[in-house]
Image 1 (cartoon, rainbow, N blue to C red):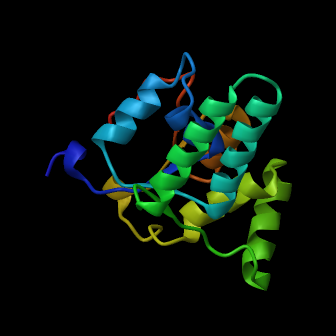
Image 2 (cartoon, rainbow, N blue to C red):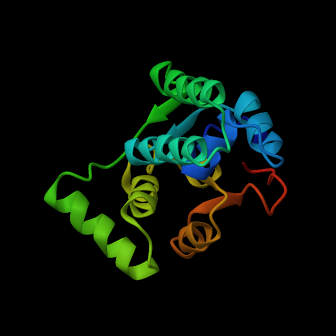
Length: 166
């Protein structure tokens, strides 16, 4: 089995999710990967954060009404159709909250980013072996650095070429 054939989950953070549905100058590498190598995952909080980013772009005049509604519909359809699987460890349990807060404090991250890391480390696909280890796709440098320090494979989609293992 070649490296390209290994099954792995690719987790999209909010910044990468937005690139799937908004035409920005740096969206093509994420879209190309998205259309060529499923499966993809996101936490429920990342999906909500991405919807919030879309709202902000719309409220600040960077998206028209039509672009905003189209982008939000496309994002929700990706999740509803399971093209982007929602996976998270459960923020609303004592154990989940404790683990997420520990990562947030350790790396000075917000809860959404910390949930993303905790999910990759202990979620549905955490058991996959080294050649199938999950990948975090992000445009957030601080999140990328925190993920790397936790041993998570990361592709910073705005400053790096697509790695062969992604």
